View 1 (cartoon, rainbow, N blue to C red):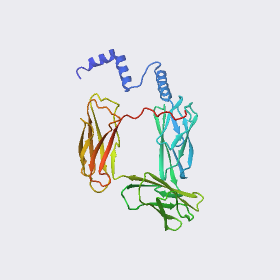
View 2: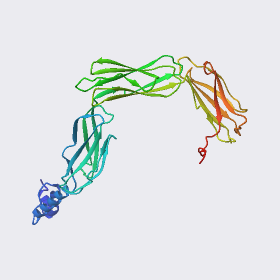
View 3: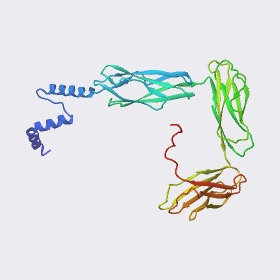
View 4: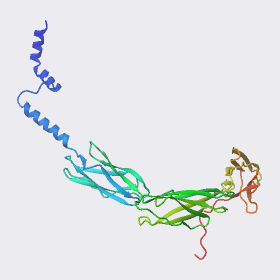
Amino acid sequence: MRNWPAARRFMKTNKTEITAWLVCAGLIAAVGPGSAQTNAETTTTVASAEKSFPKIQFAGTEFDFGKLKAGESVKHNFIFTNTGTAVLEITDVRPSCGCTTAGGYDRQVAPGKTGSIPLQFNSTGFNGELAKVVNVFCNDPTQSNVMLRIKGVVWKPIEITPATVVFNVSSESEARETRTVRIVSNLEQPVELSEPECTNRAFRAELKTLQAGKEFELHLTAVPPFDSSPLIAVVTLKTSAPEMPVIPVGAYLVVQHAVTVSPEQIRVPAGPLAGGMSLTVTVRNNRTNALALSDASINLPGGTVRLQELQPGKLFSLVVSLPTGFQLKPEAPVEVSVKSNHAKYPVIKVPVLGPLPSRLPPAIGR
């Protein structure tokens, strides 16, 4: 400690600077006249700054509606309080699903006041337990996004699965196609069902009881020949339940041709073509047996057709090239053709036509 006297002289000379440094470092409290008042004012200023913002406080962020019949709606008001010291602004209320909507909510709430966010949930199309989320955005710096939840159980007096049956059949099929619809009652009392009635003779409906008064099966059958598409029908069953007096079941049948061509027509500009034109036609085989195509051609001088087999026996493409200067002439129709091993479609033809009219001609008498 040979330099201790020199250190003492330095500390005495620079006492003010050292004291200020220690105060700033928090190692000692400020001393001297007026220091207590200065500290109090500083504390008050900091505390005031900490409270000068809005704060949102919800009475509850979750609402359980319990058990709701499918198709019914439920409403609930979420109440919140501004516990801050500045005006609270609700900038947006954003439901996560279209089934939930927000009503007219309070957008500005003064300090100490309460506001509400009314929400409505529509249960149409739902079944079973569910939870829906709604995001609330505000100017509270501590929680600018608050998540509200609506939950509960949606139930159907009588469940129909599926509510609509779809048939995809081949035009060559001679076999009946059958689909099964499951009908289950969630009611306490037994339910009786009448014999099914159908609006289209192309379908046959048969009701089978699995558990008396509780569980059933509806067997819906599409009967050939399948000549036209689509076929639409509604099967109805009357019930003994006041909650659901009639059960409707939809039936939709699409006939798929053995061979499909896309597009069925080639559309070209009015012409003459300045630089030629290339187009592609797709031929698809929808049956089990393999399809074979050959001798692709176009009845146009200078035009060419290139046949490609994309999937053996199933998918083909016809790449059609039209020459420069080509222009359709009414007296010389143009078509693309290709031979096939299918008895019903020995030659597949695709006409080449001009552009579609820009608008329909005026009706007669106008």
